[in-house]
Length: 282
Ligand SMILES: C[S@@+](CC[C@H](N)C(=O)[O-])C[C@H]1O[C@@H](n2cnc3c(N)ncnc32)[C@H](O)[C@@H]1O
Image: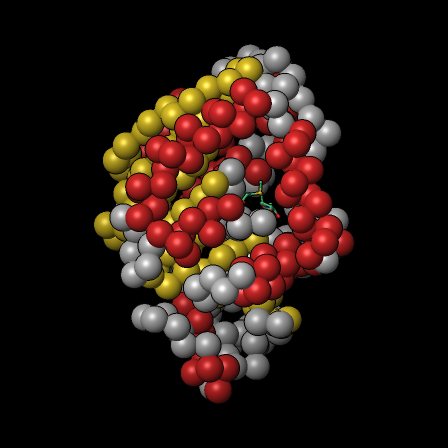
């Protein structure tokens, strides 16, 4: 299996952690499941293990995200769109999270990596680790991979996978990170169950999560999209506990009244958003 050897990085070989997202069995060097024979693919070093029967309805980035010019426009455009109050609240949130990222080690799986704000911090601050970036959209992962490699950042694995049906074997992650990941994926119960499955016993997840109050227009919209449990604090912690996780720490870093912009579906203008940095343990 030549590709496994080529992709060896730190303690992890990518082939040793991948699993078929449908039946959970091993993937061989030809990107084929050794049990159900489903065939997967890769593109410029982004492994794509998504099955069209289980996934496909998820939100997708504009295909232009592959272009580095468009990527920069999106990133800069977003910073211009959000209000100074929201920017300040985000800064406080990150400042509370940074030292915790520095404490992570081993195999780290970043959930829903997108443009890689969290991934960048993990690569810079958790030197003693092997990092797997994940997202449902192969294009955004390829865009982030190209950008980070051009900047000379430490190597990561890039895995296009649906967090609801993760193409990773049980117990592979020492740590999991997520910035605005759980808040954007439908079926929170399935996502949290998958998170639990891929983590090692004793492993910790560091989650940056936003919450709204119940009975707000934002909560109503979250319910329509199927991720209310990720947005209501009590529901989220109840789910975490039921899944088997222990809460290590929950810090409310900041809160702000949301001012709508053309890029975010959530929250609704005028609703209060609470930014939390949460550590949970399997
Ligand atoms: C707001 S972005 C997350 C920000 C990112 N974590 C960062 O650090 O910059 C949300 C991401 O979730 C991804 N996503 C949505 N549904 C998903 C799913 N079912 N599985 C994996 N990723 C998903 C989207 O493609 C998008 O890139």
